[in-house]
Image 1 (cartoon, each protein chain N blue to C red):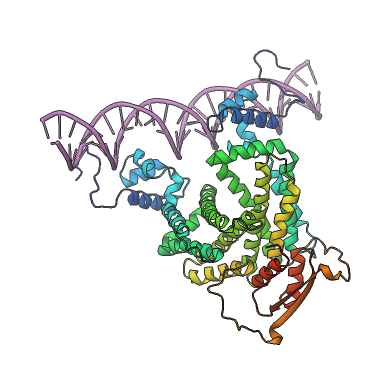
Image 2: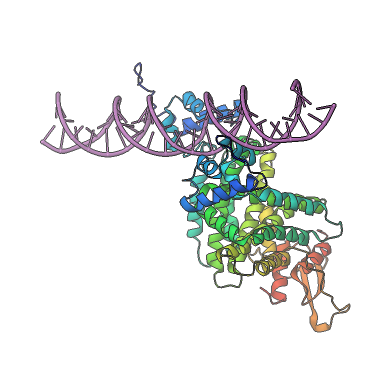
Length: 241
Length: 241
DNA sequence: GCCCCGGAAGGAACTGAGTGCAGTCACGTC
DNA sequence: GACGTGACTGCACTCAGTTCCTTCCGGGGC
């Protein structure tokens, strides 16, 4: 398949794109991102320099080979939302798609995390990726909040909060080298955001019609008290502050 | 001051850095950011190419000449916070420092906005700047929230929400070509965030020591109910859902 | 068999950002 | 006047990313 001087063929074997990612990561981990040139990568992968840029528009893109697909998935997921679903809950579910992508390949995700943490250029690139996720969420919410007072403001703030909560949990998982329970952490973090921004629950959990007395807590508050104040009192009443 | 072949001196006149910014923006607006090379800029400013990179580590930096200072101001502002100030309110005030910087030079800010909106590279750079502001806020909040349950989560989410609200108002102002009242819009947006997240009002409104009966609402809930559930009940009890 | 076509790959040459280095000029000080 | 020091310049270099052209290959149609 590769007679003498002809360039290596790869019929069936790692289809170029995967080969480039593999070669790139091997070199990035061995000697660092900035110390690795595109020429090094294509030499190791045994392909022409031009091919690299056919598959990845920039050197940074090879570090995030799956985000483009994930972003498309998220956009499709939001576009396919039933009209009656609670919007905040929906964007939380959309965020979980990103977590799923990371969790599909934990060791790869952890390696990449360590890389992006050290290389400012990669951090900047990651920010622009995250920003696109956030804008997708915000666009959906803006649409759903259209008409409400401060609709776009609420949409932007909720989208930012969801992304921040998701990333907080995701990063804790990555720092644990992928051993913690990422799903539970993200659920908890997103639950916090949902509780902060009104509506949006996973289909109200069935509760006993009449709770036992010792399970009950009574909170008395002024009707015009700001909501946050009431929540604060609640937290301490429930012993969760 | 510039006899024959000697390089131009600029004693007293625009101190290099300002000259570079002016030349850069003139060209960026005339023919676009990507169509302008660093060589073009230094030629117009009448200085050597090497000097450009002494004042700006990259071509992008010349577009945001004041953010480094503003970031330092914000860090100092947060570091100088009295211990008894409400943290969420404090980060909102810190965010207002950024608005002030933009408002100091409206036409420049509007031009830059139009530039960054069109040029993906500049958008990415701006994101990394915004990210540093957000991390400064989050670091302060993490410190203040240390010990509380979910302290870092709350810190990250609140910081993200504050930045999102600020940017929502800021962008509306920039789109209005700087004619709207930026301060009022930002106050409103930040007020929304403060109302959503626990404490943080501009000095708690004086409340009667003993509320009248019709101002009181009683909520009964199960002790082990998830907080969001309680909040939901609260909202409907208060007629705010 | 032959030719043609289209898509995937390669390769050479170019542009432009950013860096390293050496050299110059204007100053201050002793 | 010698001597450092700091601001500035010019030059040469690396490397990312682009442009353009060529080659190779498989699959028809005849």
